[in-house]
Length: 408
Image 1 (spheres, rainbow, N blue to C red):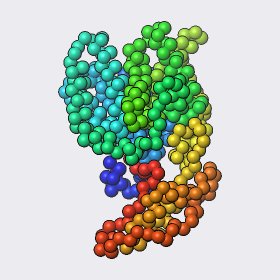
Image 2: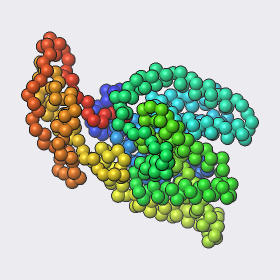
Image 3: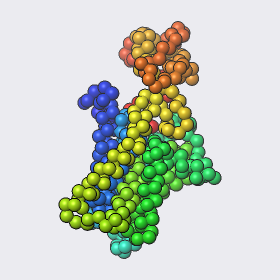
Image 4: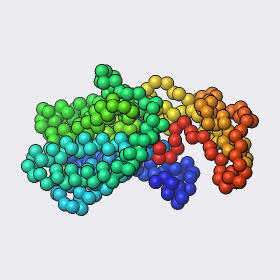
């Protein structure tokens, strides 16, 4: 997908990052629309605003990777599923199937969202006792799995080259696993705490006052079941458990947090007897919403700045742990291009493990004047190829430690 985008818009940093920015902006709109259907206009707007201020959303909305597109696709599929459950028709279920196919193309692990979607179908059947939506859902999923089977098989054949660095989640310590994942989903210690309080408020309101209980059950399932599914599958062989792979669950958690915020405000309004109608009520609500948004953004602002630094993009579990430093890929690429000759292929040192230490022997520190590090000249020993074949193709460059573009 990024290949075709580059052919039209070029490969400048802005052009490479723009698809992620557009996808994340679209995901915010879709999250709001999902919330409107589940909790009404106030709950939907609050959930969309919570989603928009999450630092992890900002981070992956500016990286040329697939996570923003995967999140957008999951949000789109969820909204189309709700529309199909409201009124089943062939067109609506075809649209849902197309969105699911986009989910698979964006990121295979994001297909775990189907665990939450299954709960939505079950809740609808439990209420309406109509088996037709369940049949449409099953058919849509089977069609998507059949169409994506070649991609799934290809992806499975490459896991040993791509995902061996991921550790299996420790199911014997689920509390630590959940806490670490929660931090990864927000990229903010303060933000994760605020979100946890608001989600608990939404759960308390659903349990004690039966406010939109089915919607709350669906969203909890959408946030929890994909995590459990990926954790269990990761025990069977290759691990797929990584915070950014499950970033799409932020849609469910944001809507729950928004519902908790609106519910708490309504309880407060009843206790202090704020005006319930007319311009006065609208004005008070608008001021309260602006204040809540401002305070929330102020609370996570240090992390909003942190995820925009060079070093944070190499920091997989920001802000957990320590900053691993920054590899100056541009400086390495410039020097490699300068050393290239038409009659030589890649250097033998470039295909060995020592290349990663040659790229940047010292880590990048915040505040450094340049993102390029001064590397020593590479060894002169090279592997020559025939001039006839080398003249018709460019030299093979080493692959960077983390892929650029729509990669994992």
